[in-house]
Image 1 (tube, rainbow, N blue to C red):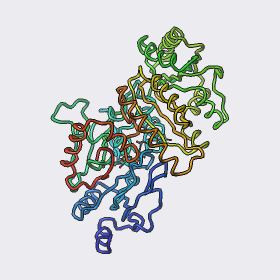
Image 2: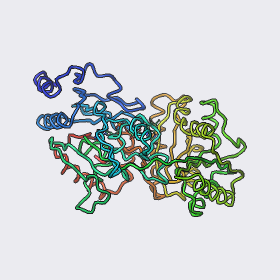
Image 3: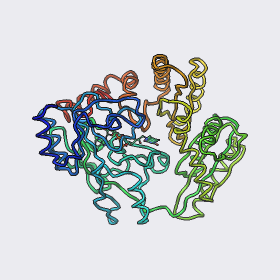
Image 4: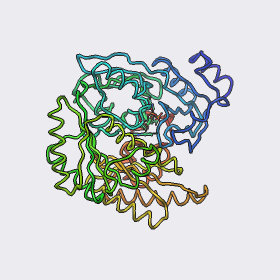
Amino acid sequence: MDTIHLKELEKIIPDAGRLIPFDLIEDKFLSDALGHRKGRADALVFPLSTGEVKDLMAFAYQYELPVTPRGAGTNLTGATVPHSGGLVLDFSRMNRILEIDRETLTATVEPGLLLRDFQQTLEERGLFYPPDPGEKTASLGGNIATNAGGMRAVKYGVTRDYVRGLEIVSSDGTVIMLGGKTAKDASGLSLKNLIIGSEGTLALITQCILKILPLPKISMGGVAAFPSLETGIAAVTQILMAGSVPTSIEFLERNVVSLGEAYTGLRFPFPYARAYLVLSYDGASRDAVLNSMELAEGAARNAGAEDFMMIQDQAVLAEIWQIRGCLVKAVEAVSEQEPVDIVVPINRISDFIDYVHQLEGESGMKMTAFGHAGDGNVHLCIMREKRGAEVWKRELEHVMSALYRHITAMGGLVSGEHGIGLSKRPYYLENTDPENLYLMRRIKAVFDPKNLLNPGKVYQ
Ligand SMILES: Cc1cc2nc3c(=O)[nH]c(=O)nc-3n(C[C@H](O)[C@H](O)[C@H](O)COP(=O)(O)OP(=O)(O)OC[C@H]3O[C@@H](n4cnc5c(N)ncnc54)[C@H](O)[C@@H]3O)c2cc1C
């Protein structure tokens, strides 16, 4: 970017600390949470208001500069790697809660607000925002742009289910309101739903109206131990069919739990078992929650569970979830890893894991699998171990291609919740109908005719 452009940018962002020229940008702003890929940008900007975002986008439109939107940078897919220069537009300083409206049960927030801070503020007021992806330092704008999922999706759904309205800035700098505080909307095409999950490729999110709920009074959990993952996964449908309403159902194999135990120094129950389901429950009364868990225990035992433990002690529960929650970091403590976030129909999880074991044998590549049994979303860590850079790249590409071809044939999808970004893009393009991609690219051309917003990502 030449001096003339920088001078113009300074008129929009006058404070020195909020406009960083290319040679002073820290690496973390040119990457994602993994830090394996690094891009380049002409400037990094931190807007404080919709007005500034509007002016920045009008500036980028005039000079045809690419814009990479950034929330907290916790994505695992290279989605915030600016690979064509231009501006990195970081929303972290637009982080206010503008309104908590108890009469419509909505909250209006700026996109840079961290999920952790939002959840805590609501909980202190007896309110609740259910979407709960593992990384609590992600921003709500990033959560919306990736349609983040998380553990509670079984009962409460994903981020999309909680977005009532969005204020956006389009690629030419126009401010547009989509949706509002209403619970229903059958008024024309849902443009709001196009923006959710679009990974910053269609528009910039500058304000979010989110549905909130009263805070459940009671929470409990349970662990079911199984002789095999297959029996455990088969039990999931039985538990749901019995009328039990878990908040989350996670599956873990013993070998993965051992990594978590080593990492945390904690002990998981039933060490003899080969596989586990970890369940959580919440509700308005203790009796209702206990009843739901009893239904789960009965169904799990009928389906072959060797043991079942109900956990009401919050400290014990916290330890179980600490082990589940640390698994990505536990793997990374042992080896660099490439995360995979596929989703299959819930009855195909154990077929998929069987295939993973087969692929491990064929490729010699070690993989750990765990994830959301209640919604078919499997997280796989493919481990680099001691491979040199060239071998790692070649073998990883081979294994990833095979995996994604297999899940597509099973009726699954490339990403359940992390998104496509840069790193999953080749596999996404390979495994998505051309007609589907054609429509997405046409939609992109309408929203962003100069192809400025997060170019080269996802479906582009
Ligand atoms: C340890 C760990 C655990 C995780 N667990 C989960 C999980 O359980 N479930 C899950 O879904 N994800 C998970 N993630 C992934 C990540 O936290 C989510 O994708 C999250 O939604 C990203 O939010 P962010 O604010 O960090 O966005 P960023 O990483 O900054 O950006 C993500 C995408 O959103 C776009 N974007 C950001 N802000 C805006 C905006 N205001 N307007 C337009 N586009 C924007 C960016 O361009 C990019 O494409 C995990 C990550 C880590 C590191």
